[in-house]
Image (cartoon, rainbow, N blue to C red; front, side):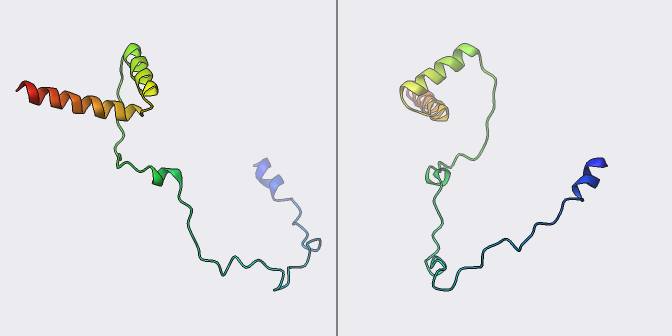
Length: 95
């Protein structure tokens, strides 16, 4: 309660010390420029992966997975996807 009451006692900011607004000649012309939304890195690297997957693994497996991914400059999910594809291919060939 004390904090809320003390916050209400702050003085209002004075607007008398502000400079005058710029004239029409001094104002920037960016309002006439076309609006272009910046492309963030996430949308540029969109992969279609929309489901989160969390699992518990042994520390040795996790360390090996991370080391392999780092060595081959892959994301962890890419290593898992490639491993899954290889497993499916080996099962198909053995059938």
